[in-house]
Length: 268
Image 1 (cartoon, rainbow, N blue to C red):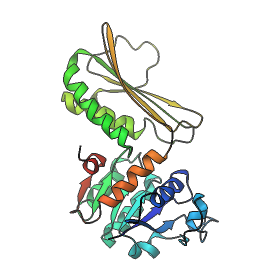
Image 2 (image 1 turned 180 degrees about the horizontal axis):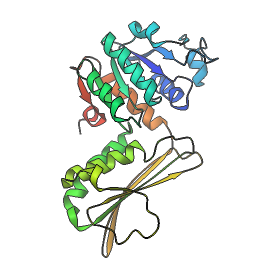
Image 3 (image 1 turned 135 degrees about the vertical axis):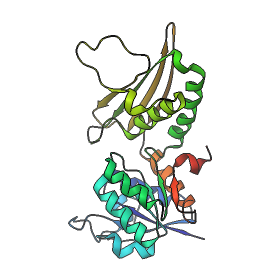
């Protein structure tokens, strides 16, 4: 049975990558809809030509509502406000959704949580298989090294990224904090300046770098006296995220309503 996929933000960098990723995924997955903002000059264009893969006879739509009946699952890597609106459309229609957007505030997250009681919803801060493997490795490293190390997280992204730290960095921090029985909101330190005093062992530090065309680099350092363990993931292409999101889109339809993440998709 073919899974019909819709992609929002079709003209964006990630949207084009997702369109290409669907085209590479095999006959069981089909791009059935591509959506852009109503004011976009690309509405009506062929989605395949837009993504640089050739004509596929799927015209870019100006409205999710117009095409929601033609898809089994929506993939959304846009911005928080747009994603929340799309989640509500999917929930009303009973359509599964894969969310790669990050930077939601508490009110927006509450809308997503409510939708997950009505539809299968897969949300991850990073859909890369490698990053999700890193989450598992971080859990193991934290269990072994425990409270005997200082833990710092450094992430780098391109100049256009609008939220900081990255959702992936925060997820890494959550894995570490949860494993240690800490509340990340209480122990996170976001950057340092001036006379900060000695480092407190229980804190988890975050540092953010923005510049150029960096797709996404993340390093978690476990630092003890005399040695340091680092777990690093570097993405060189958005296709690593695209393939993962498309894999999730093929897995999600038919699942019971609920909140899933990429580790569920991968069986981790």
